[in-house]
Image (cartoon, rainbow, N blue to C red; front, top):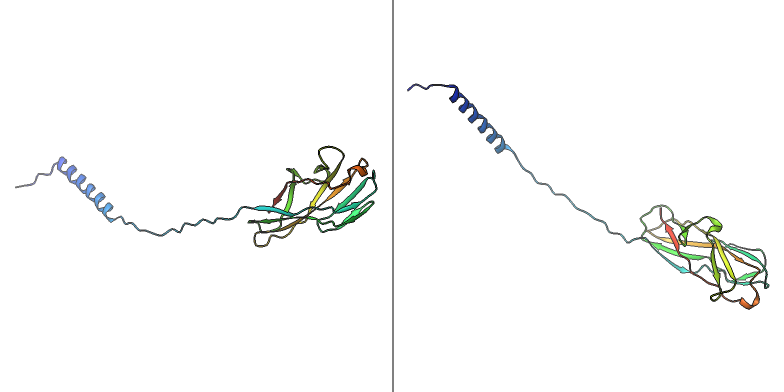
Amino acid sequence: MRAIISKRNVLLLTAGFMVMSVVIQTAVAETAEGDLEVKATLEEPLTVSCGSSLNFGTITVAANTAVTYTLGPDGAETIDTGSILGASPGACEFSGSDGSGTATITEVNNNALSGTSDTVDIQVGTSGPTVTVDQFVADTPTITNGGGTINIGATLNIGTDIDSDVFGQFSDTITVTVDDS
C-alpha cells in the first residue's frame, strides 16, 4: 500500500511533533532546593529610670530676697546671694539603647529643651508663692553596652514673695525624654 501524503496528514504529523517537543521540554525541567535561614533579634526597648533627684539642697537665704541659683549637671554651683548645703544634680539611668553615639535629655514635661521656656513652678502645699525651676541642662554621656547615666542640672529662681512663713521643702516631679541618637 502506498501512503498518500495529503495536506491533512502533513498537518496532523506536524502538530504531533510539536506536542511531543513540548512534552519533551517539560520532562527535561529540573527542580532544586536550598535552605534559607530566618532570623529575628529582639531587644529591650529604651527605658529611663531617674533614681537621683535634682536636689538644690538647703538654701539659706533671707526672707523676701530674690535668689537665682544654678546647679550644673557636673555639680558646679552659682548663687547670687545666700549659701547652699547638700546640693546634687539629678541622674537618670537609661538602658536598651541601640544607639552608638551619645544620649541626652531632649524634653522636659513634653517641651523641647530651649532655656527659660522649660519652667516648672514648685510650691509648698496647694496654694501660695512658688519657686520656679528652668533652664534644664543635661550632659551627653557616651552610650556603653546599650545604656548610661545622664546627669541633669537647672536654675532655681526664688522670688521676693517667699517669706519665712512658707520656708520649707518645695518639690515637684517632671518628665524627661531621652534621645539615644
